[in-house]
Length: 397
Image (cartoon, rainbow, N blue to C red; front, side, top):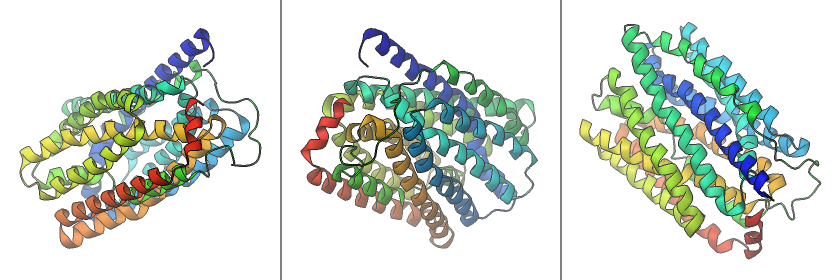
């Protein structure tokens, strides 16, 4: 941002894209907490649920590097953002027709394809819409609005369930309305991506820096223990949480997430990203250990609230950290590579978690996840030691 006019336009970009995320999450979180129970009603086992979540999140993530690289090359963000959100909006109502778990898999996969297409260009647009020292705040605000939508989504689901006698399928059908509203905000955002195509070489891009590569590796290893949140809902059900209260406990998680995201985003602007990221790895490990040990319903409620703090420690801060490491005209590529790596790791992560749960119980599944988190922490610390000082110069980009 070079002048007051550009800074104002950049702030509006963050706000508009925040509203896009808010309404999209209103739609997504109407249905997401209900999918595990819906799959169980269709006869799916825990291992099948893990397979569905792994395939949906993982295989669609292959597109993230493609969309990110393509966005950098053409110097455009908004068309990818609109197309990605559009795919997700159209796919959700088809859950209304689902009669077997493969249909749910197809819908989840389509929804995740949309996310894969839109996420790298969107994050790149946010990163270039604000001054370098405000990236943590910008991503924190955007993620907070995303989580506000995630708070409202279960509330809408509860209302639909109340007025339609517990009909899950009606929730799926009506989820299209907020998803369609989200699309209306995208044209209001302004392009800030470099106009010229990316020129060859990674020497100055930051993509081949030790800092970025080791952060990517640490995050992938961590993700091997970061299975789908669907298993947290199943853990709550195991502790005898009623189906009617599933949206409510999801509201608690998302409400805390919404508050914590801007707080830790601003904190990372002040003290640096690395301490916050290290805290996120350790905190996640502790939370999952406690989930494994939890047996009573009050403990589950407390842990869902505590888990929301992890979201604030990680989501926006991770995005801002990548923007610190990688030059502006390569950032969509960097976000694409990062999200592809994470997405691919989710395939074995969710399958392994479900298999361990089926064979040895939920406790050991959560314990294994906690161990992967600590391994990711150790790799990240090693990456900080190896990171060349010259990448610090990219922070102002």
